[in-house]
Length: 254
Image 1 (cartoon, rainbow, N blue to C red):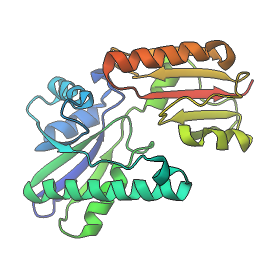
Image 2 (image 1 turned 90 degrees about the horizontal axis):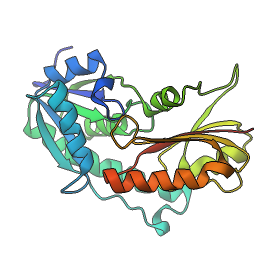
Image 3 (image 1 turned 45 degrees about the vertical axis):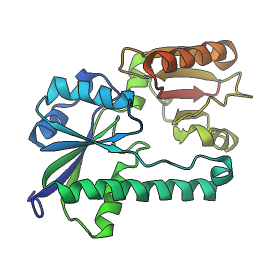
């Protein structure tokens, strides 16, 4: 692959947080790059620190370029409807594309984006890079290096298969969980949860995990009606301990 104007971009899946969960391909990509672009949500963003720890283990000479993440409109007025939510996300993606475009314009060479888990699962970096190219101000070749996702790690930690024999599985977000349940899905994998919405699901079984692969990892499983309080408690503990919480869970109708 020949870079265009000395620029190349690679989207590298870095797993859920444990340094041992980077693939050999990911480590090679990091060490071949000139710098890493890292979204920074605040001055003391703990996820930036976690990325630096991963790089210290596998690519200690790689320069980290933090880019302040544009604010996203999360107000109920703006996101109360599906159309409003999608419009707010589109605006956020466009603002991110502009911020990343500026870095790429200023810096030739090979850049990597450090993507949690795998870039294919509920991550927008692919879409944002496409937006950068569509803006036309900077050109580059780009590719994607897959990573170990939180979905895979959840299954490994609980020693389960994510679907029953010959049966489908629905992967969705916390805000659309009810839609999946109402549509008749029996096996639902849920990501991106601002809060746990488990009302009416007492008889379902849940396998839950938060901050998987980190020192703050928590796991809970059992019938929702019996373990819901334990999940809520563990979620709060993780947030207090790590400063952030990323949880994922499997729900199965009993």
